[in-house]
Length: 391
Image 1 (cartoon, rainbow, N blue to C red):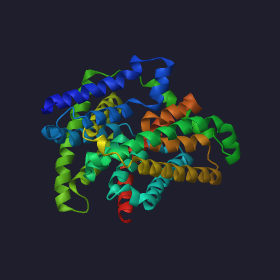
Image 2 (tube, rainbow, N blue to C red):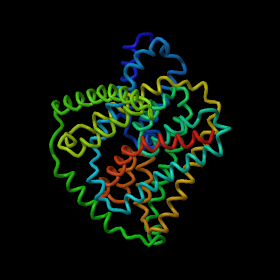
Image 3 (tube, one colour):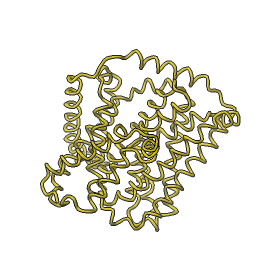
Image 4 (cartoon, rainbow, N blue to C red):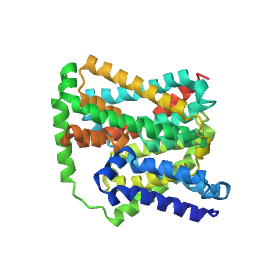
């Protein structure tokens, strides 16, 4: 059993690194099919939760190391992720794409509130907090979920059900959308959609990406790591000060909001174009995921079926709203599916779906997913508060 904090952190980072590299090590068709169902982030969740359950490390003895690192790294990760989100590029997608995205966001929130109203007795007391964190993930990504977890002070053991619900329900939904995109012709004829604007924007964004050939340098890595950690430290201090002066939110929520604002503003400056933000933020994401999963005990998972049913209720409501809206507004399947997956799947899967439809539209999938990082934290916190009103 691991008893000291440094060895615990070193083991988590090493295990996460091995799991991230498995798709590169095993390249056969069977392996790739497996990783399409169980991507590395899911393997990290399940693997480290399992190791926690078998007590590979002493939870009380390693608690100090965990507490000292988790939130500061989380805020640094969120800051670096948001540096990739230039709101000016998002506006170029046009009103229908943005309507599709925000319709997906609102329908996901609606799904969570309705599912909680139906299932709250079966889910257990206080389940709205974990569902709120998961809602942040399904509106944006894992970083938003962890930001809400920090803001609402949700214990890792309380997140275990939500993580299982996320990995199973979201994975099945991604599979469904990848299957549905094959019917784009029939769907677009049914909705009478016009795809010319989206196709033109996709081609323009792809041309921009090709023109940026600057390499990632160690100086870039140094400035991004340093700025991410400094932004985290400063916002933690300011969040505590503002939290005491304006107790409308607690200090953790203020910290998340400050980090979000700072990242979005700097994304529109030359600082947001420094190469390496994606790579470094992804490394931090997997480390933070490993930290969170390392405190969740699977031995308390007896109520998983109720949570899975709740997940399917949420997705059914979300999909129904999107189909109805597509018919009313004449939206194409690309807009609906990528908007949906940009929320639920994030940057890991939205570009894949976009590429399945048209390689020229992969940048659109990326930008839509990045928009989720902006709205995910606030949307998840708002949905959590709505669910809390239901009791």
